[in-house]
Image (cartoon, rainbow, N blue to C red; front, side, top):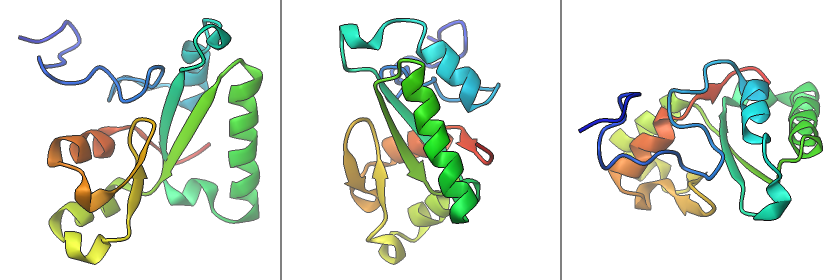
Length: 136
């Protein structure tokens, strides 16, 4: 059975309490922030947002400034917790194929950090399927 949006039974809704379900955040990271902060996060302090950024989006001094402003924006809107994976989907797919070459690759999953090679394929696929923001 599937939900109306096509999510199959047994598939997680999202990887964090306010993260978008995979494939649903189509209007960019700032639109996602608007949706995620419609309620008061201070009421539960467990509002976790996971984002996957392409490394080129935060490259260099300008990229660092963009990342800082991204975090500030989310916090000013009332966000509580945001964590990032700064890695391309291509690298993650390559790491699935040749895990021995990526033993030191770590990712944020849902409130914890884990070596990529120690995560099961279903969770790896979920991280890969997260929207990859190439511009912030």
